[in-house]
Image 1 (cartoon, rainbow, N blue to C red):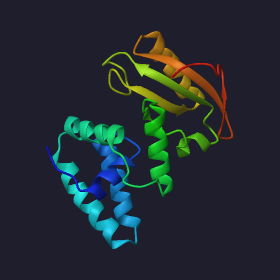
Image 2 (image 1 turned 45 degrees about the vertical axis):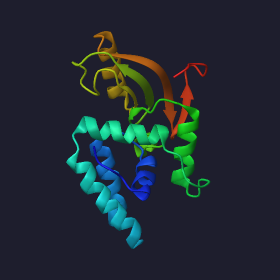
Image 3 (image 1 turned 60 degrees about the vertical axis):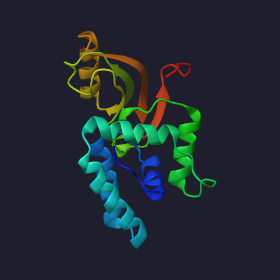
Length: 174
């Protein structure tokens, strides 16, 4: 297993996803746009380390850090505050779209679903994943069809109106 510096752990702690591809993409964007040379150097070193890992090892490392890492000081940035709140809530991270994903605000998007992937034959996600997707009417019909085929189980649904969510049931535990 690889060893991360304190700065690299803090960077991993703030990542949105647990998959290697998502982490590498997020860190690569940070490398490209940061003006802080120290942050850029940390991100580049972290990228090298993550790219050496298998998908499973990378996911295990990221999930472990996000679950167990403690900031050495009070959260100072928005990213740190979000990561701390996510950790303290104990909520399961969802695969798929982030709650504030840009897809949510697309005019043709009318549905948001949270679902469990039940089958390795599912056209999206891996068996055992819990996912969130923002969908068009066509996409939602496909999701209902996949549920009928027992590839997925929809746990929650909301209508999306101009980016706002109107849940069918607000009392569902996810």
